[in-house]
Image 1: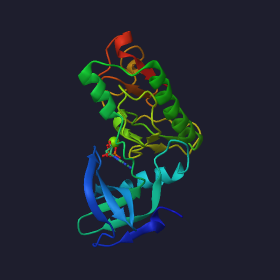
Image 2: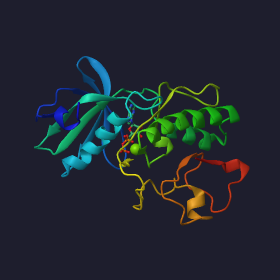
Image 3: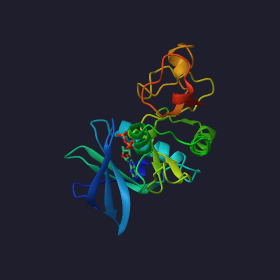
Image 4: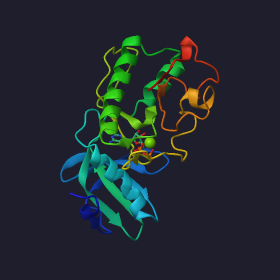
Length: 228
Ligand SMILES: Nc1ncnc2c1ncn2[C@@H]1O[C@H](COP(=O)(O)OP(=O)(O)O)[C@@H](O)[C@H]1O
Ligand SMILES: [Mg+2]
């Protein structure tokens, strides 16, 4: 079913907001009750409905893939408030940035095993996206969701991770397309892009870093960064 055919125009939401769970550059995310189920609802206020629908289109393209946040059918558009709402599985562990901040505050680090597991899960998700010609382009801990609450200092095993926030992803539909526009979040670009090879292709991504700003030189062991 195409994204367009799923739009329900209404100024009466069919869901009940339970609590606000997050926000980023593009929208607010709420825990809601919809058709008797707890789900996450992303709301985007916009003048450009077609542009806002892109995220749902992208998530539909990779739906069912391993470690990809699951988008649901059905979209609501409130023309009065110019708000688009769409729905996803609710991941109760929130996003991976919480763990990064937790470790930073205590001066601890992910274990090597945890780093490998996190990188593996994300790589599997990205492989699925790239197999469908979709470039995520906003890789960072805030956009990686956890199935369960997780304290990495006491729980060795990493929970299931899910890649989310396809708001600025690009669906590359023509062979040889060059992506030249600036994408992503400052501070999460691959260090090689900024320093060693400033003209490196823009879709070279930094998967994650345990600190926000990437050191200007090669990373020390304390601040390892991992690129794909
Ligand atoms: N399906 C979800 N389940 C639980 N929390 C979510 C879900 N989707 C998003 N969040 C939370 O909301 C935040 C913002 O969502 P995101 O899709 O990244 O929006 P933005 O495009 O505004 O950055 C995320 O960083 C995460 O903390
Ligand atoms: Mg985000």
